[in-house]
Length: 223
Image 1: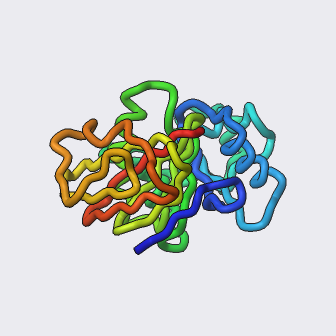
Image 2: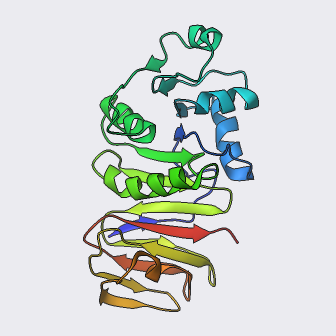
């Protein structure tokens, strides 16, 4: 059974991906970007296409890689990014998927913190959330930080540290049976009939125990 502690600036994955949604404003995602900007060991940062424009408004430091066609980036910035741009012209996938595949191609599965995937257009957010569970073959762990909380990709039975009373939601896109313990509304080998049915729960213990046979998303709201 996998164990996940409460995530902090200290233990979140150091491979950072910035999607082209709203640029982060909350302290934790900005702190991760600052750690990369300062050159702290182990950190890398990849932008999904136009997200590089938003990063440049925050810092002059260039990302380690940019994945996409960069059709919205000025020629001057493209010149600065020479050697960091990785073109994937496949129109059957979006830039986030192209980025995940690129990172996997550079060294196999690794833990990733995804930033900037919420906010902006709501259809992009919904598409990103639907795609996260499809990345289980590309990442070892995936945490999507937002300004309000975080999504955690779970691919096997797991124990997740949580604060007593903290609000959370479970989203099972494949509608397979799951078990959930340590919650105000527990489940036992139950198939949620619709996607929203696992939302708006609350922790009744300091750990959630979740049994699943397919990739699911667990959302923990900030307290």
